[in-house]
Every structure is written in structure tokens, then in C-alpha cells.
Image (cartoon, rainbow, N blue to C red):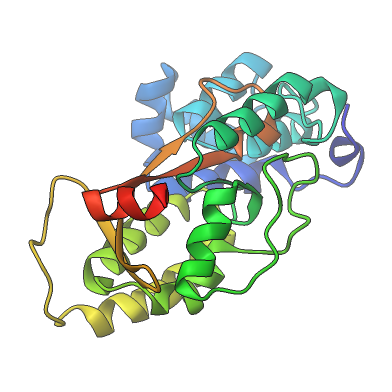
Amino acid sequence: MTSAALGEQPDLTVVLREARRRRRISQWDLSLELGVSQRHVSFVELGRARPSRELLLRWMSALGAPLSLSNQALVSAGHAPAYDESPLDSHRLDQERAALRDLLVAHEPCPALLLDRGWNVVAANAGVAWLFDAVGVEVELPGPDPAAPGSSGVNLLDLALGELGAAVLNVPEVAASLLEQLRDEAVTEPSLRERVEQVAVVAASAAHAPSGPRYPPALVTRYATRHGELAFLSMFTTFGTPHSVTLASLRVELFLPADDATWAALGR
């Protein structure tokens, strides 16, 4: 059992009601998804019935809850946690950590970085340092080895709302896309709600600015840099079906050149 499991746990009824509220799912719809009666769902949420371990796992999965919240619910119900919570620098995750490092390095000279659930930069390759230097962002980035997650103190949303965002040429499209993404993520990550409000302000102020096509095939972020205008597509990749709380919270953002000029600048 993890150290979190040994500490004081929130009431199961609070965890379940809050998780369902965030997903805006009724008790009736949840009961249909789980194959149980609405009465049973109500009794569990009121603390009048104790769910089995199997039902609780299906329950949290149906609500799209993070693995950490699923562990929390299990422990609150008196069950053992289901998902590993080893930190990224533990020996249990040596292979996964090496795979992340190799992916970042293999993507060079294009930028690639590893983010946690709060958009903190856990690791970054040389391409990210090059791009940040090109747009005039002065931060101390971590290297491509994610052995010390979160140690850099660099948050990508802070940069997007500050120096990095100031270099973006197509703010209306980028802000609208980021706002949509953050709203979706904030459903299961309440810490992002303040970020949603901040980005909403930027998106609203930029909504009437001149821009290109409203819905391009894929968002292209254009930066003003000392190498001229650079354009990047963005792609996120995650571990497939992770059973680790730590791995489930991570994703790699890959920057892909969107035009010949950007490829040429990277080549130089």
C-alpha cells in the first residue's frame, strides 16, 4: 500500500459524487453504463452500500477518472489500490524512463518535451532549447532524461501566457485551441481550472483579431523568431493503457515543422 493510502482518506461518497459531477453524468446514465440499478448507485453515493473492488474499478473507469483518483476511491472503500504509484526516477520505471528519453533525443533537431498533468516540463530535448532561444525565452530547461520529474520548475502554460505566447503570430487560433483542450482536461484535473480562466481571457481578447481559416486541417502555431517566421504542428503521444499513476500523468509533445522554411532553419 502506498504512503497516500496509509494517510487520511477523503470519504468515498465525496470522491464518487465529485467524480460524477465533473463528468456531468446522471445516476441513471451511470447505472446503465455499469449494469446496476440506479438505486444501487444512489445507495453507494450516500454511503448506504459498499461497492465491491471490481464494481468500483468499473465505476471510476466509466467516469474517466485519473488512476490516482481510482486508487483514492479504492482505499477509501477499504480496498487495496490497483495502480502503481512509483515515482518516475524509481527502478520500477527504468525501461519506461529510458523509452521517453530515447523518444525525445530521436526527435532532434525538432523540439520535443515531456509534460506532466499540470503542464510542467519534466524533460526536454535540444530542439526545445533552440526554439526557446530563437523566440527569446530565457528559462533553464531540464535535459532529455526524465529522472527528476518536475525539478526544472518550468511550466509550459506559464510560458504560453507570457514570453512564449508573446512570440505567437496567430494567437486567435492557438488560444481557442488551447482553451478547448484545457476545458476538457480540467474535468479530471481541477488544478487547471484557474488556467482555463486565464486562457479564456486571452482567447476572448483575440477573438476578433485578423486570422486565417477558422478550422484548418490541423493547428499550426506560427512564431516570430530571430530566424524569421517558424511554423510547427504539434502532436501528443502517451503510453498505451498505462497501469501506473505516474506514467498515466505524462505525455510527450512533439513539434513538427509545418513548412520548408522551418525545416531549413532547423537544418542550419
